[in-house]
Image (spheres, rainbow, N blue to C red):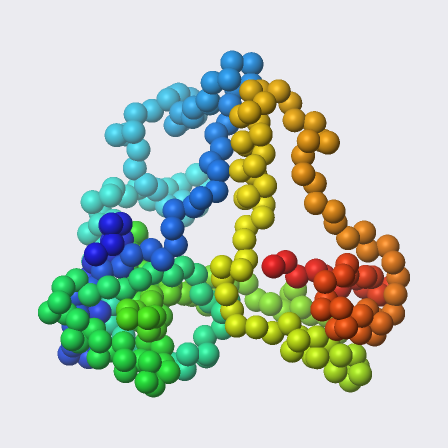
Length: 283
């Protein structure tokens, strides 16, 4: 059993079949450096106090939650009152609908969690649901409550277990029209499309997440190490490893750029077309 603590315990239910399960976050705690605000003259960390206008600092026990229904007017609620809002989804994730694995637009996906049966007795039913989803190539949909919110969730097979993906509700997402309305619906020219398609096919390979690294975080960790060795001495610009960036000054024909990329594996600097420079897609 994983060393981490489950973030949710309850039942995964399909009709009359209920399976006790636990959820574990699929993402590890962030390895990104954590910065604090420091008072430069003294080198000491800055602290924050909770204050009320006209009152000053207040004790933590005097703080409750409030919903602002009009400017300056609040409905006050205690934690006990909020906890009293009982939803069946707090302890049960019922699969109420199934959809094709590719029917959910990726924009809806939020966070990933491992779904694990709590004991050996639950494994038989767990395997049935897992294998049935895999055989039908379907994703199960349901809702569950955790951390003060009710989530829309998708369940799908993952190895010997199940993966739960929380989904955004439709009202949580922005409409694309205001952003895409100014983009012409005109189709790409066939000859350009043919070369671009060939370039995509040439660079197509099985997905390997391990092939991609967070270069920014690596550079940030390196800077921290160098600063520690420097013992407070300011790092000059010449000491910092600044990667060379494409200038985009060369104006070339789009077809020539595509063909050159196709012949050379697409490793050369991207060039401007003289019309609208294509956005560089970050890896």
